[in-house]
Length: 256
Ligand code: NDP
Ligand code: 8X3
Image (cartoon, rainbow, N blue to C red; front, side, top):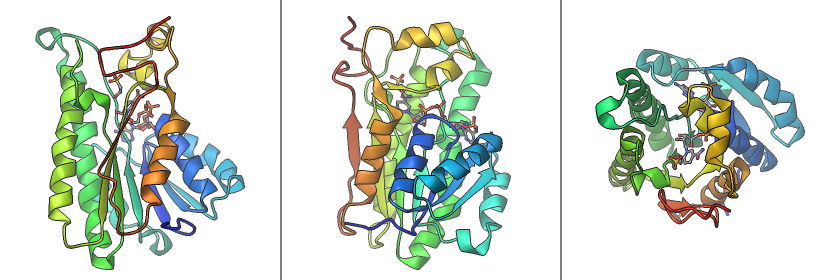
């Protein structure tokens, strides 16, 4: 087992959903938590609860992963006791809209590509050199079943998650010869704020996504992430594909 107590775990998009659940799951392992999101006030509200849950220390930062300059500066200027990052959870991400490509909104595409692909790369570029130099580190990227099977209206979101597969494979190649590990956790439908964000705040439409089936919960995904990160140091879990029992792939569901 790789022990996580006192490791520094950096989670992007920790203010909601899977990122928030990861913060609590790593807190229970005694990890020190470096949390990032745009809604930093949400992170600050979580801090006392995370300490209660077992995190020895929590540091929250306001960060929009789409801004390369801000990502570089923020990470380069972390307080010294937070600069040695052991685990990076590249979780910040979103979908926008469910339109056909020929009817899609350019702003939606840009937001998805800038966050899910470019933002993840900016954060990775800023943190991984330190992991390589220290000879210790684990990168966990949030993929999706959407990266395996494209669904109607999902072309651009699915493309970002399919693109992540190449980034994961490339990172594993580039980091060969170092002890830094790379894992992709690829869940199917998880009940979070994801659909509300996709439908630009339309809560009723978002609720329908999960109607009649039992989706994964954010905690289920967080548990898989902690499991992958806590394997012995010589074990690299490359890929975890996980769905609820009511889902076979991006297209097939058992709705009652
Ligand atoms: P939520 O909407 O619940 O949470 C998304 C998180 O990402 C929020 O904390 C949000 O924080 C953060 N975020 C979004 N944009 C940015 C940005 N530009 N900079 C920094 N943080 C950002 O969604 P989930 O928890 O469901 O999604 C988390 C990840 O899991 C995503 O990558 C998603 O694609 C993936 N995923 C989700 C699935 C699902 O069905 N829910 C299934 C498979 C994968 P803030 O707004 O405060 O910045
Ligand atoms: C999120 C799962 O199927 O809603 O990646 O795109 S799905």
